[in-house]
Image (cartoon, rainbow, N blue to C red):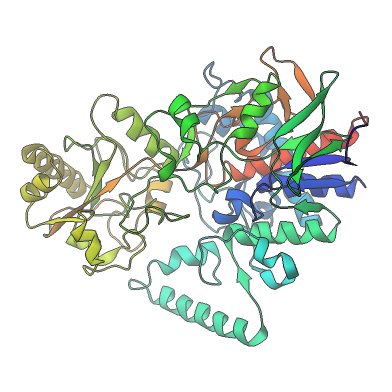
Length: 558
């Protein structure tokens, strides 16, 4: 290879979930690896997420005696994802490769010293379907001491968990005022904080723990990682990708890649121009994706002839923008806002139109689809005093005391009657009253005849384990009544370049672009237009990074 300032065996664009996994595979094979990150921080959207991976038939499930099998996982994916002409990345061959390679990837990470565990209960999002798992197929990282990173500690993208608590513990802490076990857990976390101060530990959890561990092992094994080095161009010679052009000291810097280039640079969540083309009606202001999720690498691969698919899809994540959070890097999580008892979601006509307890991707798809016929962006979360005194709202503790700005700026609407609340949210009072009365009848019968909320284990998991007889159905009956707006936010886009079962990027004629691989949300998801369970974007990012590197390391140098 010539005309390069330097050359590595493998070059990775972006530092998200699959990047360091791929790098570790290459380093184990004795290959040199360079990871180029355009921002000042490493870890991508994975670092700021829960760090959950959806991995069927994984070794940690087996360790805990939880039944699963490749056949059961394939039955589930075939049912949820299926084969559809409008979801070309969701082929059965890719599903089969995923089910085969995903547990191998976890075994590989465990062998590299990455400490992983599972959430004891996190049902698949369609657990009632054939092959669905009620215990769930989640894999998460153990807590990690950031001090082990040395000078790289401040280069790891921060996450959303402020305390040294595992993700499962954090979810239990939300029930602090309802449960003595949660109170004891809060005490343990408090003692953990004190112990950390005394011992000089800096514990990370969730996505930062996952990416912190990955970064730590990558550095130990000799992976070269450079921040603030955006890639502007892929270099192509004789029909194959041979390197990249980045920037060093303000000047173009050409880097050769003997065994290929892996693009894992995120989707286009922060690119409003691309959103307007592919996802009209959505906003970059609503995303929780990392700032580097700007889509230029997808367009660069398209310049080389790469096909794209499923560009209309995003990993929807319902969002409510309370005053002061509009410009936050991470918006308050509200996944269970309308899945808990005493709350529903209505459109701008005052009508309920979905099962509020389902998958967050399905939730936001439902909002956008409803908006085509009835104004539904934003929709309104409607709840009563039972709700507000029991559950968290937009990151605040239970109770009527909310920030004054919420009322002053019209974010939180409060009224003594349903009819008055309807006026406050510009909804027809008769319609809203009828909707709530109908819902309350369902609550009395402990069965949602309209949308079956509570029928599946995942709905109940999202609800309140202490609320009887239903964990998710509760009357909206005790004044005052409240409403907040909900929009179809996201944690990233879900479409991108087309890849095969080896994570190789494909042209529009389905031929392979030699030397070019993609994973994460830079590629069109093999999950198609569905989200089977928690971690259905991070899990595939790791797995396809693993698969890409395994394929690339066997290839002949260009």
